[in-house]
Length: 336
Image (tube, rainbow, N blue to C red; front, side, top):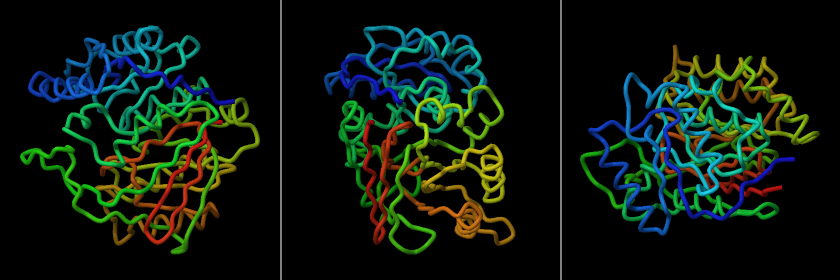
């Protein structure tokens, strides 16, 4: 079975398993911390949150030690890193998954590598969604703002989220926004079939750029997780592309297929991407069609997930039903 952390959320632990916040950007994290304190949270901040050198917050060992300390500190209710980064993978070998206490870890991008590894190796649900720095604004948009209600869903309970009305086309840090994001483009969820789709199963996923590197390692044994924690159940993969071309994306997905990650899969949901550059006319839409034909699976895409905000909060291990109809979508998650 999948284990869900308690929904009592009072104290946030801020640590940086990937990138920390360098001195020139400390104000961003300070604003984010102050905002959550205004919202009634207590904050415990680790050293790694404030440091950044050579594309990481600290050594893999130091990052792992600080993370484990927070996971096992009874005074910290959930862990909310500042943001993603590049080299989280270096810290996995120093983690002791057998000693992790059940508490929420929330984030995306490079952090999705850690989230998926934790769920696969412990059966503990993890949360893929916004990062704390993007909550520094005066308010949150409706989609991003659901993160707290999702994390306050208890075992046996259900939570429903819906597609956004608009998304952000590009970052504009020079123009401040009360919700941080500049949501200017109409959202439209799509299906490869062109028809309405409903996909249901156990959620697993993250940023393909990084989670693909779990294949063939002790940290990415999907079948072992399925056999132990969700025997006989189908999986729904939610995936997003940060920086890859369409051909690199296809290579990565093919590697996941060869590794058996798409065995007994109910369908795949892809987030919007600012990458997905065509190669010799090979577009991402054509790639989605090819993948759907190859795997004989329904595929939905351009959903609220990943590096083109806002994004829905997806729970690794939860049972979900994803519905897409006329450009709109819902994600209903049951913590069973």
